[in-house]
Length: 300
Image (tube, rainbow, N blue to C red):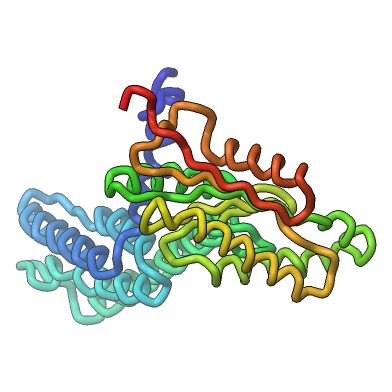
């Protein structure tokens, strides 16, 4: 049964394909759907002389395109498919009676719309599950695994573009004391406020992820290596100010790595190295920050 265990098996390939289809732009989904309906229509009409009926092939087209579209667009596409499907019968030499055509049309439309509603409901559940997997429910920032995966892609893109990046790890000092004294609801409020301030402090191209209970990771683009350290320290200052506004005894420790495009990435993962810097900063005292530059390979 190698088929079901192989990495290229249908069991694994189909979810990947459906995930790609879910990301199709609406216009492209409509174009593909219209072309597919027209193709089935032409083949269906051409094979009637041999006694072949290809009406069932409208169903997989409907399912795939409705998966790519939102609920309203899916219902509209189902209605279009219901109108197109009977054309070979209506235009053929043995057209059904008017009453039969009306009954068949109503039945087909009802079935296609019902199918579209089912697909749309599953797509909504899929989107909700995908969002929960990607983003932390409390703070709205990336979860640990998606953050690390996105960080790898962004670092590769920065290296190709010859851009400097900053990988930082931040931990909230005194967070456990706050939750112990004021309760978990107060701690949740702190995490939400911290995340909002952190998101407003970075740009849309930067990344922010929650790595642990009160530990966050950052990947920032820097315009140049010589200004990267100042940018990292400015971010730390702004986050510290945000924590001060809560009125609670909180600060944050940061470890930041400046990653030039030619940096040596052969050692431990950068987020782990940034976390090690953060722990060194915590050993110096609450609210400390350490910034280091990833060295270039020795043979360059």
